[in-house]
Amino acid sequence: MTAATALPSAPQLVLGRRRIPVILPKLGDPRLKLSAVIVMLQVLGQTVLDFKLSIAQILVTIGFCAVVDTSVTLWRQGVLAWPASALLTGNSIAFILRASGTKHGDWWSLHGIEWFLLAASVALLVKYFVRPGGRHRFNPSNVGLVWVLLVVGPLHVFPQYLYWGPLEAPVIAALVVIAFGAVWVLRAVRMLPMALSFLAPFTLLIALFAASGRSFVAIWEADTISGINYWLHICTSPELLIFVFFMMSDPATAPRLPAARIVYGAATALVAAALVFFQPTEYGIKVAILASLTIACAFVPLIEAATRLRGREAAEAPAGTDPPALSARWRTAVQRPASVAVALIVLSASVGTATLTANDDLILIERGMAGPRNAQ
Image (cartoon, rainbow, N blue to C red; front, side):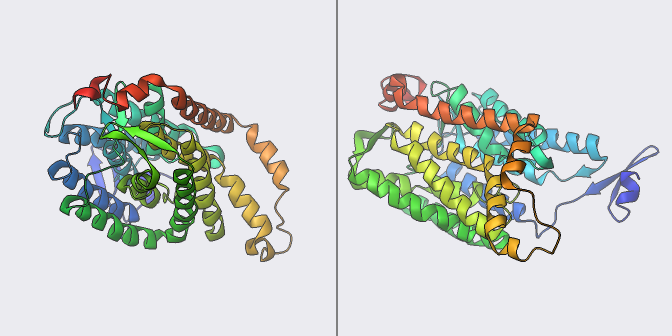
């Protein structure tokens, strides 16, 4: 069956004798809602929040992801589909990634664009090829960001700061957009409980870290950040909220079962806190939070399987449909090449994040004493 006959009601693009079905965006698609929220935050970043990011960097990254994804879909499925996921991937990468040396107001600068395109390429490659069981395992933009931040490093790239400025009109406007966007987006995909299951343990653990004397240095603060400020700058950061509400909530990679989503949120919080604990820099803390999702996503099938075996879903299963033993399915999964790739990605994210704790150059960069960011 051809793509044209499979989608007879879809608009078609006629090229000679070939008819290519065209799949347009749907207004109810939650990805459009999320894209609208990120675009509003991008506008605030370019106008009043002083993001060190250019409009050109944003547009080129989004355009690259859109062209690649549209081409792959056309080649594989024979349809010209609106690249909703790819647009979101590109926008998410551009929202978080920064090229060292870019200044606010360099609207059309392509400085460091190669790092944005590298992150986008890694994201799309993982999305297309690391698909154990036919389902992509990782949030694409998350993997691309973690990989570039760890491999390229702080001399060339850095994540958007945890601190967006004093609690005045620009930051308040951003927080309002994030709060309303969270309700608007997460209610549609039923992810609010998952977000809360992350925030509750994570904020508690960071409070314990602050009480125990943990601290970090950041280029936007002359003094070492400790005590209540340690907790405030991490747990009330717009960046953390965006991570929880808009990156963790990807329905394609989060668990499908409500109970499994609660476990997933809490597990990600524990991993994030464990990675954050040892980090003496803001760069390390931000990478630790992002890497926690990479690690947690790898275990989503295990979380779902355990939930089915122990939860109500297993009790309500029809007779004769008992799932195979969890250990047997796990042994089968790890023998697949895609599963080996998953393990390597998790291992590199874990080890790479851990090595940031002993990076003396990173501390100098955060103190403004070395690297391209010391002039910003």
